[in-house]
Picture 1 (cartoon, one colour):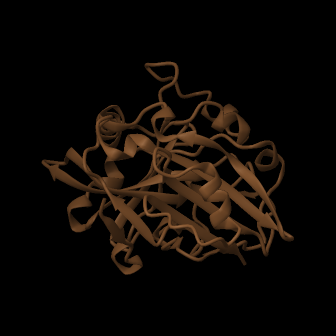
Picture 2 (picture 1 turned 180 degrees about the vertical axis):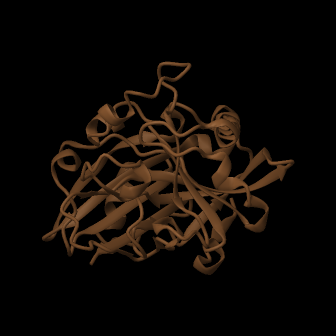
Length: 280
């Protein structure tokens, strides 16, 4: 299994998009179900759509580079929540004003941190308030095969908050293969959405946002946030909180390994992408 060291400077030339509603119950827990009720999907459990969280050189707030490996910028926002996700670093093929192919190359722990204040605007307005709006692990893992046959199918997502010396589970521990859409189904769905998604409700139309795609290195995709633990549902981020997100091979590492790592024990997490951030 090959690791990939994240280069933040490189990511400044990647388009950043997230998948909305790719885990059962997440939109309801996030208080966003009503906003998305206007969007009808072909299948009951299909994701609702894609939203931008970073567009390099854009003149709007989305042009601010939001990704950090060490900190989340609280920015005085009263209702910030961790969104523990699998991040996918992808190559693409864009020809004749269409996205032809997406090629996920690396995966790892990602925090699509979100502002829950309901302002009636686009979902993207809750996703980028400048540097430190998002979190990415120092190390990602090379994708051997983006299908159920590949190593990614063995991975789980876990997230925690350490507050005042106490550790709390923040998100429900979730298998990657419990995403509503993943692997080729997600890939095909994303290609279609990038080419066809129109502006509706909390979502932007996407074709205009990718028209200059060939000027950029790649795509960073946040594949969707897990459901919350009881603590996660009722506790927003505070300054001084420590955030831990693990995307780990559950066939190789136990949940106890993860807990011991947070406690500072000498655990070798060789098949894991770990994100550790402090809220400042």
